[in-house]
Length: 317
Image (cartoon, rainbow, N blue to C red):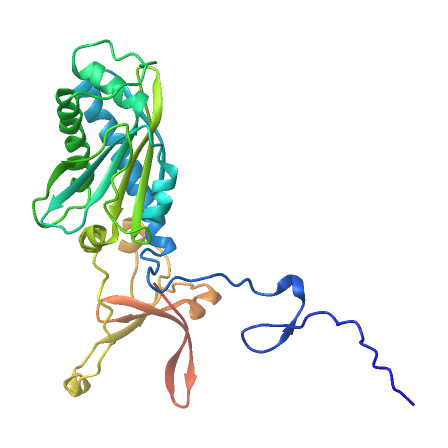
């Protein structure tokens, strides 16, 4: 006699939340890979704040480049995010103006790029041309590279000045490949911040890209945050009231009075002993209690034992 083993179909997968409770598959928390070698440098709040800073930088840079080139330079959409060097490299065309830079005394090497057509247009304008979009891409001469590098130094000066760093930074172009490749200045997994600004000049349009390593950004970020904290208004110091024994023997005069009515001078001159001044019946409930020289409470006059007393009903402001 043989027994056949039947395999039952597998049931639905069981999903648990972080506390061990069973949850439906559609609400199962998503799991994503985390690279501990390259942790996230900026929080969501910091990224939002820095995006606003970069938008302000783009407006200032547009004015400066327009003055340098004597031609309207429009800087539009601004993108600012974290990425690895490999991710940045994958977004840049081989046919681009690429340069490597540093900023003493900060550590690290950054990259700046312009599309070939836009770089050629900038060079044409720097050499006195009309600054029209160039349709033919060619390698730049040494003189043209030097002119373009000089303008890019001004871009870097504007970018580094926005952080308010405590030391004077001196950005320098180290050179690199022009229109024919890309300089591998960092490891592929190195953490960078990537700034991309849509630039339009003389009909040529393309992204002006800046890729700055984490080691260079960290001191700039600390300096920016310190400056932001100093600009915040000082919070008032709230002190809890303390009772001092010396207060116990201080005498404070307290009076109770009514605001009864007003009289003309003629009526006042006719008053004499025995005159009767009628008061409204509701006045007893509107007795003003004055502490020192300030009215503090409203009360009702009554009898307490053999003494006249005032029952406090409300406080005045």
